[in-house]
Length: 419
Image 1 (cartoon, rainbow, N blue to C red):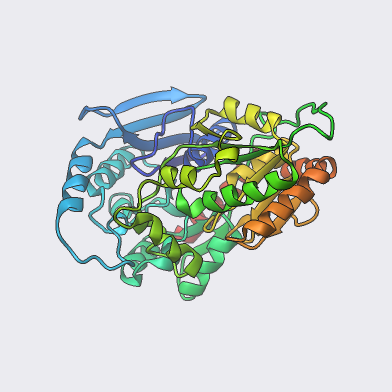
Image 2: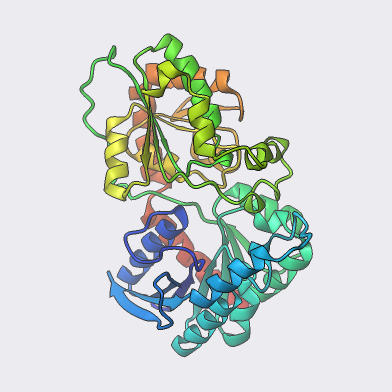
């Protein structure tokens, strides 16, 4: 069905192709498939050049409109310097005034385009603003994190009143929203993240079984990702597999404590506050310090990688590990499964929805290095069977074609709801 759909990314996202973060990847992959299927698709994002002029361009049939965020960045820096006693459940990032000029510019720009559906990524305070200037559009709020179930209800309720549907990137996220707001009138639906099953393919692995195993982590190197647990587990794995190597592929970018650690009610997550204490040093320094000298040369910090580089990293690895303490979905898991790799993950957030325990990989308790090391070893010993099953599961459940179709179905429901 042909319609005009507008996606509104968070203003700090790099919305220009090629995408890098999971949210940007989701928007890019779904938008271009909807455009291919006949819809007019607009993606709105922040322009990170020092200019006050918006930019527009078209890529693969998708219209991109990038809005300047220079004023917003200046106000945000000032707000963070002001003294205050902000409650943990009212972080600046979820306040009504946070990047409000960007929200207004997006709302005004979209009013000129008259979209049928406006699909907002994560930033729920934008919803009432966008509704104010686009009263006839169906508005969908898409949550890739737990904020709606964590922050002060008074901040969330206006957003839920302004939207026609709320989408969670996993059943875990959707269930948390339903439990917190059981009486909300908006639709609640789950639409998973996915993987390009054509770009991520099983590689020919001709290495002998006695070759040194290669362990891979793909994601942000930040405390909530549990990389410190993986480093400790890897130390234990090396005692039994002396030649094993570990590659950490992703930006060394510790998230602000207010966005995850201080919002969480999980004691394992709140305990990560120790990494943010004065004098604690950087998380990268901590990881280096806890790696034994004999193991340090076996650990590689590969930095942020493009999609082709990530696909190559999967092709060269033997197992993908996600040791997160907080994870809404786990994009690297489906990419690894599509690449024919066995996966090991923690029983956290949406990851049990991705990994079929004992079939495509193994699930373990979070913050348990010994259990994680054991699961990695079992996955290495059974890599062919687990990898083959993972590829089939990725193709069946997590292709972008399937997810784009599910998103279009939610848009149809939202349109019926608003009318």
